[in-house]
Image (cartoon, rainbow, N blue to C red; front, side, top):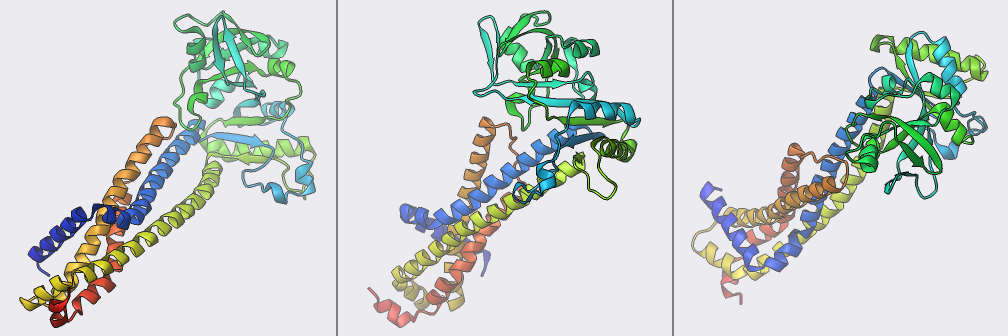
Length: 414
């Protein structure tokens, strides 16, 4: 088939779409939905990947996280030992600090969740649903997040359980505006707290507004206010990336001794690194990809059936046209490629609209969520190719039927 014939076939296909707009739209709807869902979901997954990677990398490559249960714990298959496992407590943070020379800092973090959300007030201004957590003086060093105004609380304030706090930048702006918060007292739920510092602004990824909407308390103060909140997570920073494995071994041995774990027993705690968290996330996204492929496949299957049906109808409607073309010299291969090109143009048009719709949906989601929009250029090409491919496969039978029409019968067809 020559380039001229291909161009003519595409022009005729577009004329057919314009002449039957509603029917053509219904025909390509399945292809549109299939390709659009692929583009939107891939864009969201890529954005999620970027946000998760940024959050994990912000922890630092030499940070270890000690928690009660590992990331792959199946709650329905827990053993009796796992169900009775002791929570991680502040005493274990002290053990790591004293017995692990490769650890440069240890930051316990224990969050308080109040029914209806926490409320922090200053005068007539209020901040709703901020995170409230207790931690240690090593928080800045371990989390690589530092005070921008004022200071962080001291070990003495932690030991004496003084009512002081450090605010996240967003919460400070909401409560105080252009006023310097340092030295002012706020009402945190039902407790009066003296603000001694404001943290620098953290890049907001998956945490959304919560990344800078928090109140950090000395752990002693936190435990005084919320003594029932005992279980916490520990963030430990190795002295260097090279000492990561040594620091992990030291922490494991120290905690096994402290928790009375026998040599023939498994750890009754979990130590996670940047790599292990990323592995856990990749396991989750694997199933997201699987669902995405299943959803888009259904849409494309429906689209393929629609293209097949409409092209069979088109062959019947244009029987006389086929006969005339054959009578003036068109060969069977010309008729075959004409209808095949029309089917591919029809589904390709659905693919293009689906790509535009998928990107528009991704853009809207990025506006209302912390996920960045990442345009998957390769998948845009794949989406269009799949759309055209659906037309190619679905158009073969109608094209063969059109090519096999007897010109004598076609000329008598009304």
